[in-house]
Image (cartoon, rainbow, N blue to C red; front, side, top):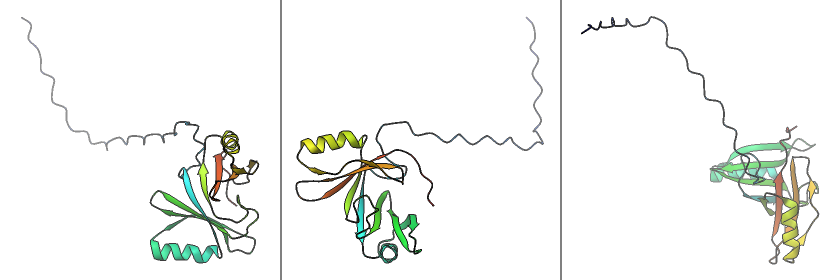
Length: 163
């Protein structure tokens, strides 16, 4: 019977341990949901008298934090995303004709395909606007339900840098 030799014990290495590469960021799977990054399926879209004052109020009173805040030509905020946990409240100035609703409050709702959703809304007898591609990267249309509530239907199309 052949004898087996024992391997000599390894001496501890004096080299620092190798750093493992950080795992690559996962790309979310394409789901066709139409959902913009960091947004919920349904978001509150409030038309307010003063966006800055509303930002301050939501921060001080309810602990909201600021997300995206875009200034208008006068330097005052014209759009803000206020965050509370996973929820988002979007603020726009009342009467702002450049907003998705012309400056009216609504529920900003992400859908897989705005145009298909509009077809269903029309068939259900809802008031609808025409869909249009917006400068912020969403394709939107406004639907008014039987109770008079406005729903901005939106499909995220592309990420647009904020300026």
